[in-house]
Image (tube, rainbow, N blue to C red; front, side, top):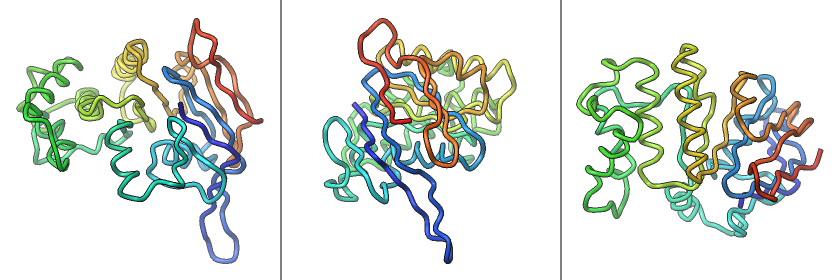
Length: 237
């Protein structure tokens, strides 16, 4: 369960601080499939950063599975990020000098206690996204859609409960976009919470719920986060 209560995020900017988020209250039960929409500057990426513990609220509370993140140290948040969340970005963020398998293994390379079979797990994740035969290819030898699949495999290696995707199809053609969204939808069906920041209304329509932001506030909310179950997304509008 992810719960934000009256969250503000303010950035210093000379004499005029910028309120990137204003009084966001949002509750996401497990297995949510949420799209976050809004114009540029509406606070979408800021919200995603706070949900993924990449940033902290200026005020208000953010709880992960009942634990207030304000009470967690920076090292504790880093551990929580590695265990709970998987991140997917528009720009893929692959290392060009590493092949696909090595890119997927990166979370293990920087882990203080990787599993003994981490290479096999990474290869299984590439198989999971349909790229087992491309494990030795460098990013420059892969299409944009394939690179994003590598990024998704990398996000999955630690078996996170929550997938956070910031414009994951923004750099892709329409066919590759559909394939990536279908893959994320399948991960949701398998039990993962998936949160997608997107400008694409067609992608948002495939999600169970859509939150729209404007000027750092929730201005619209529709749908349920867990189809065929009682829990629904709760937000203060």
